[in-house]
Picture 1 (cartoon, chains in turn brown, blue):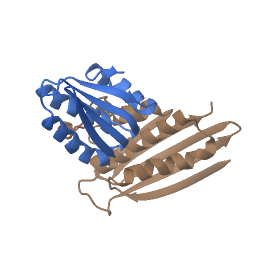
Picture 2: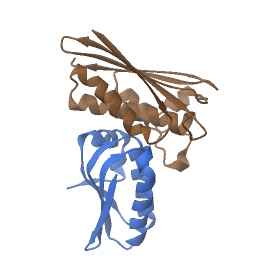
Picture 3: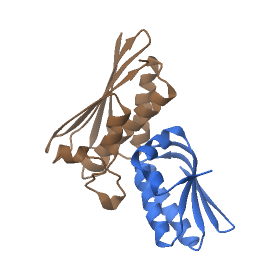
Length: 145
Length: 103
């Protein structure tokens, strides 16, 4: 059985906690383990934080983040697909961005580990970015396999 | 996010409770730095992360930032107590080579 949810939020720091909790709550129907849920929350937090910190140059509610989740339920668990989309400035060099510890903002105590964590904690990961138009992160978590 | 400190026998203990992300780290940085400045003559500093229920990569930057600050004062920094979610992030990022875990 398939299910989906679509959530649009303002790109504001106070929504980071809401976004990861909302996705985790949606995933509950797949009976994830505590460890699966932690991985999902962390990966979503990384992607949403990227939108807030990097994609948009200004801080305001006009900057939007779209989160689309789909579940495919199987007998024992299933798959969770997450897309996190912004309409910000895009990534100049995707290879560089995906390199562990690379950050464009070292002075802000940014670790440069966001994409590495998303890739490590999730089972599927892809990134699509277009300069001046935005970025889409797609992630998949297999639950109960 | 809740932050409090204790200082006893030259040991500065900083206790963090709640969720550590990009949003909550802003205030936490100020509070931790103020505590380190105030107790700059400590023999060691310990971060108690047992009450941190969530941490993302912001935590890595936060911890390395405090490590550097303590280092300027010559104070070794340690982590005591941590939950499995945060431990996974800190292990993969190599933070423990700078800030060892103690019991």
